[in-house]
Length: 139
Image 1: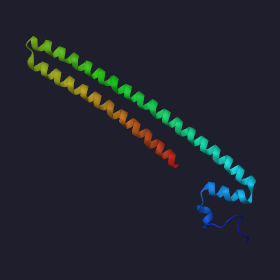
Image 2 (image 1 turned 90 degrees about the vertical axis):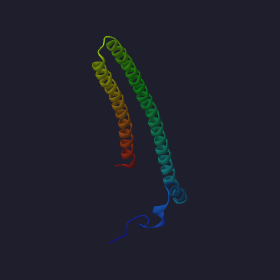
Image 3 (image 1 turned 30 degrees about the vertical axis):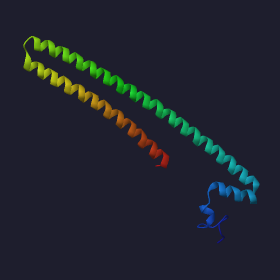
Image 4 (image 1 turned 120 degrees about the vertical axis):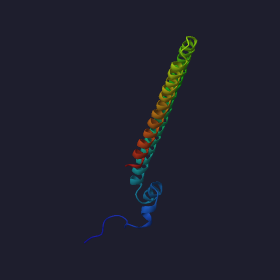
């Protein structure tokens, strides 16, 4: 049985970084080192472009979530003002207990809607981050 070509497994060669391997290759076989360096440069450029695209996507996504939350907050405030006006009018007509019921239910539903929208936005970002972590590790 013949030995496999190349350095044996478990040697210092396996622990070298690709750039160090390329340096050694350049001393022994310049054409291989040039190819490896070209591939490494290409891969580094591609990785940098992916990182830039990811950062841009995160900024766009964060801006959209912020705008959505701002709209939700504005609509919640408008809803509470409308409920307060209706409650004020209802109290003026002498319907105190039904007014408290409507005011309490409206405030609870408004707060619940705002809370759920914040929760969904946070869950969306964390799911996106988890997906990117899985892709980054190759899982």
